[in-house]
Length: 249
Image (cartoon, rainbow, N blue to C red):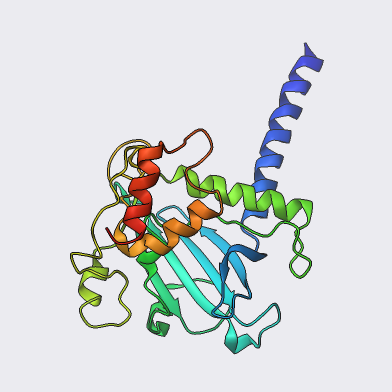
């Protein structure tokens, strides 16, 4: 009986210790060569990513280099996505910040700079899945870092639907580029049955509707084989619908 209790206690401690290790691992900075992004010269883009969780909000911070693996510290572009977990559905606010470390405090809001690009073009549902070049020679990933990427992606996936903070609608009136383009053509919805299983506004698998201003991102995700996800496929008619949509019809 005594041994049985020791086994239970040891197992519980092992689980707690493992959970603590994984939680701490997932909050470290991870550096990747992006599998998705290229700069204007079609060269690799490098991202430093950090997840900063707390009770009421999660902050996702990123330093991005468009100029190679070893930029000057002022050449890192610092970005933050702040997720308000007190709202149902959760909401996200997006910030482009002056260069600096991946550390968050609310005073950083004063360090906002103009968006380099419209966030909504790529971010229809808060932070996106992290897709590194796993065999990168300039930003190699250790086994623990590969595990960290998987943990971060699991967290992103389990958020469910995240809507953008409506403050962006006000600031879009006075900034350029805006967070989201709002002309009727920009907001025309991609309405394909298979895509709509996830890309809808409500429901368990909801990830937000896709619209025409996201055409470039949609095309890239399809060409790289990330969409549709495993287990889904487009019919011949749906493939034609998608081609027409991407051509502007």
